Image (cartoon, rainbow, N blue to C red; front, side):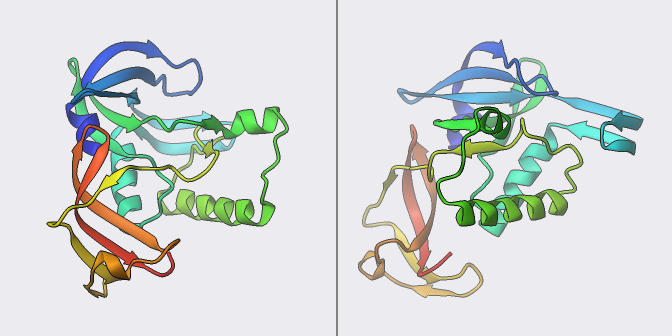
Length: 209
């Protein structure tokens, strides 16, 4: 996905009517496949900023925070942040993010009075979101920048004889094989993208996330 965002041909751009940072939407094409992305170029610095939550001194809103947050989420294996990459769009430096299909803003979910099917699981995810906001010092978290998906995002992964298999946590793992992988186990793969398909060079799995 990161390769797709970095190298895909950017089509016509359109403004997104929601969001305070004026993001844009565009369709990317790469190796015969296409997918939508969100472009953000915001770069604002103020000595003070007044919002409904109070006054923030030395305020800074910068597209690069999106990329940094995504890289941190990867390290933590949080799996709650869509891919973000740094890329130049025209003459502007920007972040491009993968548009998650079958999703809605939390604002829309509330307005449509839609209740989570599993309240206990929902609450646990919201606790993780709150901790994440504190970790990255997000002072502008609101119902328009929290996206809700219908389920886990599915990614097509291709394995071959050259794929390296490891079992265990990131800091402690051992060589293994695909034969040791059990159904419903957590798996994390890396490699190169062929269109939107990931050709895995290495995969690590374990019993629980």
